[in-house]
Amino acid sequence: MRWTRKGFLYLVHRYANECFAREDPPRVQELADRLGVSSSTLRRQTQTYCGVTPSVLLRTLRRRQAQKLLRRTNLSTTTVAYRAAYGSRRTLFRAFRRETGRSPREHERENTAAAQPRRD
Image (tube, rainbow, N blue to C red; front, side, top):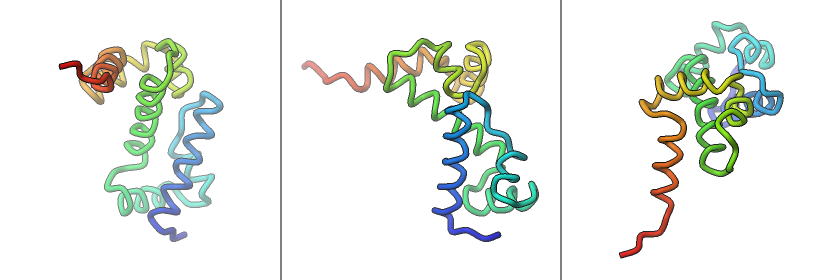
């Protein structure tokens, strides 16, 4: 199956958001099944449109969901972990540190400080 880049990304994001609503991690095989393609076709399409593997893309979307929740809400890191489908606070912290080099709270503090107006 062929999609436009925009159409493909829309379907991937829609699937990921459905997973986040269920607090269930997005899975490559489940995404392939949802799109009606084999995992190898999904891999080719993801490489073509995004330049990464499907697992890297889904991991990135999960991290961005956590970052968005940290930035826009006052939720605890435990709640953010569940809503971004990490399953536990510990898993969120490990994944976040591995991917960004910072803890979720460090990220939140840096973004909160950056968003504050400067007082000169």
